[in-house]
Length: 356
Image (tube, rainbow, N blue to C red; front, side, top):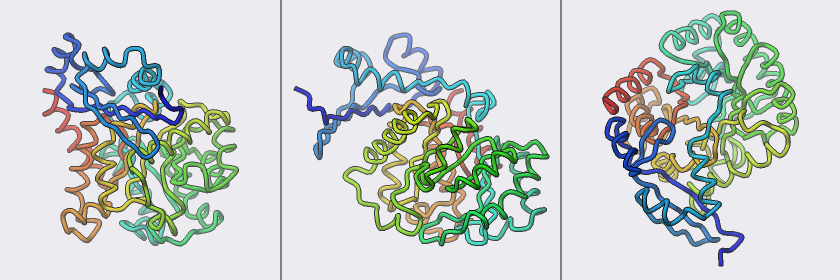
């Protein structure tokens, strides 16, 4: 008898190129998930503290789990269709890049670079020219240990930039935890809210995104930027982050937010140490069964330094590209980055080499 506390997870494995994938697909030996053919799938069963993992080829998987309703629901979620975000975020492209524009004095990588309005606009326009679909504007640093800023200060930093960029018809997302900043931003032309707290920081935030039917990125972060690195205790970081995001999606949709307006982000570097970050990046395909798009932000993160000893964030482009390409082979299509031109080039070339 299966316990009510039993949880299931699916992780597509062994991505293969499009030509070979089509041949195996016709033989029912591969499946197409988020434009990537996969040859195998891992079924993970969690009963309280016990975790069982087993890898199946697809004929065997379908035979074993054909009548398991929960597994079938997860499998159907893998190839979610989202018409709203397809036209808004992807603009009918396969990959969407969000260029990072921090208008802060203390962000870990580019703090102070865009405090001048003219410089911010110039950098944003360059990222768009280099291939960014969106510019993600942020007025509060959320690096580990960063001090919070008031909503008033945050608004004074981001709204002039948002208004100027909107006048240039640049698509914008707004990186904020504060409902008042969200409302000012949406009124000024912001199309997506990116909330590192997953709409938990401000009790009015959910009402704001519901009011305007604004898509929102829900990220996993235990605690706050001040406390998150003290709360990185997990039984299994991949499954615990998955469970958190699943519960947030359930709560938000039951509260009236459309599921088609939700993007999730596992929060690389937010309350995770070096090993935990690596585990998440290597297992990203498990999050597809949440049934919503996944955004990934690995750009210039500290785990790259832990692997390669490049201490300066600006020297972590190679590591950023490596992690981004690994994510691409797992079907991750939305990437939030600093170095748009280089990452866009890497993605285009890799996709061409992998599939042709």
